[in-house]
Image (tube, rainbow, N blue to C red; front, side):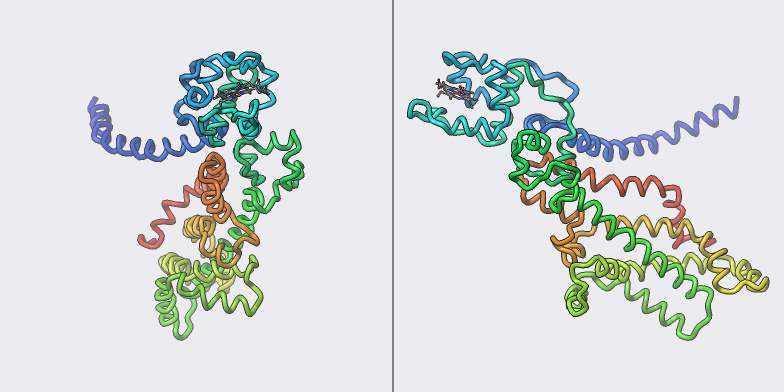
Length: 402
Ligand code: HEC
């Protein structure tokens, strides 16, 4: 009885914490879910309605499509049959204008010397896309799919034509005029996210492993090797942590220019390694230095040299710290734009560079951006969940002894 009451009391006393946690989760989850859902919606739908409407079926009629009633209803009527001889709900007719660019082309043509739209302005390309969507729902042929992978395909191959998708363009042949081959080779198109993903991996993996490796060596040396000037060197390293990255851009890019390292992956690896190391060494020294001294002394007494002590003793014990450092360094390099922009630029675009390009050049076509954001978000998520059990332990590495 007593125990039960204790449990109940405990549970109720925790309720505010639970609410706070649930609240935090929602704050994080809802926008992420919105982004995920949006990234799988067709372009027309993204431009028209919010992602939360995916669950409700759209009502028939032109009310849900203000663009049609604004531009076309005046002459063609709500059912699309008001003009004699033109039936806008005829599937064959609509199939010819199923793409917004085609429809705009038709609207620009004159009817008996008069503009098609009369005195009314032409719809924009996004509005035209909405109108084609309405027409195909009128004709009942092409229900607009609720979900599509087109955004991901377009983002991966770098297809940025408004009012059309890569798969459609490949079907009707316009993709070839834009320089796409419509084979798997398009995934390596330098303007696409597929190539950028590979470039990001090539940059990030060595730029994470190298500083970790050096930091583990240096951390061991600083804590268990006796050499003159040890404390001075360590103090200098601690001081180096405050050097701002921007300050070194000019001298390093000049050195790189002389060595021919500008625009190479090697240059970026070295730069990230150099900037990752001071903090990594600092953390590793604190962690390894905090291990019990007896442990190492008995190992030395048993005849272990420094290499075996490092390899057999220090490395396994430091695994949580290394994992936490690894996550940080990985995220930092993966999300870095400045260094990639300065030293790689457009020659070997990484994900961040490609996304920044999309933001500026797409403006209205941000449906691709949702997919691009998710592509660049996948790996950090995987790394984080893969290593998260080390994460909290490692976070405390610098502060808690033992
Ligand atoms: C000012 C009146 C007017 C407006 C506004 C108008 N149309 Fe038309 N449209 C016509 C007329 C008249 C015809 C018949 C032309 C003919 O017989 O050659 C026509 C023909 C068409 C056709 C058939 C073309 C073909 O190949 O036979 C389509 C499709 C069409 N309109 C779509 C639209 C769409 C979509 C809109 C809205 C963006 C629109 N129209 C707005 C007057 C209009």
